[in-house]
Structure formats: C-alpha cells, structure tokens
Length: 280
Image (cartoon, rainbow, N blue to C red; front, side, top):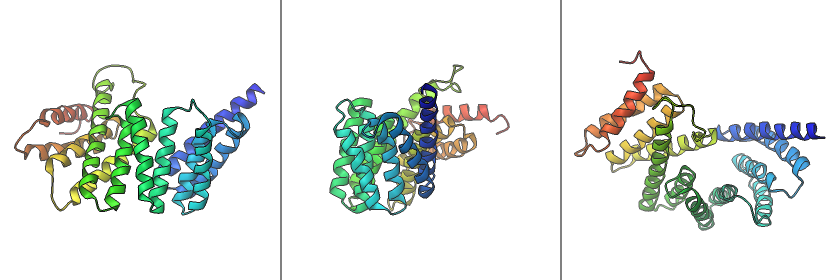
C-alpha cells in the first residue's frame, strides 16, 4: 500500500506539472486530460474533500475557461472554493491562487466588479504574507491593471502596471544577488519556479508592449521594464535575449536627463557578457 501511494503521488506531481505547462503555453485543450488525471489520483490518495484537490480543480477551471467552457470552469471553481472555505488552516498561497482564478474567471465573464473584488483579495493576502513588492503580489497587480484597462481607466491601469514591474524588479534584483552567476555560490533554493518564470515573462512582456504602444511615451518606465526583463532572461539562462534587452535598456537610460540606473544595468551587462565570451 505504501508503494502504491508513493506511485500515485508521483503521478499526481507529473500530471499536475504537465497540465501547468500546457496552460502556460496556451494549450488549454491538451491540459484538460492531464489535470483530470491529477484530480483522479489526488482523490484516491487524499479523499474527495481534501484541500490537496484544489490545485487540480484550479487547473481544470483555467483550462476549461481557455477553451470557452465557462459553465464547466465555474463548477470546478465552486468545488475549489467550497473546499478552501471548509479548511480553516488552508495555506495563504492556495487562497491567493483561488482568488486569482476567481478574478480571472469573472473578468472573462465581463463581471469586472467581482473580478476586482477577488483580485484585491489576492493582492491583500499575498502582500500581507510575502510583502507588497513580492513576486507573488506582482501577478495580482498585473491582472487588476488589465481589468481597469478593459474599463478604459488607463491612469489606474498604468499605475498598477508600474507596481507590477516594481515588484518584479525588486524580486529579480534580490534573486540576481543570490545567483551563482553573480557570485561563486551554490545554486540557491530561492530561485524562481517554472510557473513564476512563466508568469514573470508574461507580465513584463505585456507591460513592455503596452509601454511601447502608448501614445505618450515614458522612456524611464520602458527602460525599467526592459531592465527587469533582462534580469529575468539572465536568471533563466537565456543569455542572448538578456543581452539584447539589456542593451536596449542601457541605450534608453543614456538618453534620459538622469542616469540613476545606468550603473546597475551596466553591471548586469558585464555579468551577461562574462557568460558570453564570444560577444564583443
């Protein structure tokens, strides 16, 4: 029995990871079978009312919404919400994920007020636990900004986009200091997970696109996003992209009246170039 449970837990991990990868790649249809397997084995191992089932329900909800099956997504979210509500010691991280999923679902339905309510809860829980400028909080800022943008409240949206970038920038800077490429240390366990990397890339790329397409250009803000993206690519070992984006940030900052971040970006480029010895 112990061996069977061990195998089942392994299958849960594999199927959940696979479903998550498909969702992050936008392959929602392919994610559904993997998420269903994760839910099935989690039910066998932990029981039908366990909080351990919530991640699978949230994956199924997101995948179902991605293929346009909103009623089915709503059922999965209701089940996840019911389990969380009856679990007093449910982790903050899981509560954040639930509120974010509910917020995104409400936004997809066009219920922006409810979407903002759930995203505000996501931000509150994440910021009170991980900090206002944590990577866990940045996603909430970003999704809330998207809702305000859909409501044509561009000033509020831009302010929240800036908060999302600041949170990503601070988190990436701290990880850069711990990176074995900045100093000769062992790989830190605090480096980003694949899901965090994917979300960070999504957030920063989307904000960069909005900054570059804005009628009124803000070079300082654009440079800040580029700098954060360069750090992200460096930490995820995409060194060619890191250098390309870092050079853009450096050139943009040089054109500004004040060059506060010039030295920081220059240091990052030195780190990148040290790993790309053939780059002149």
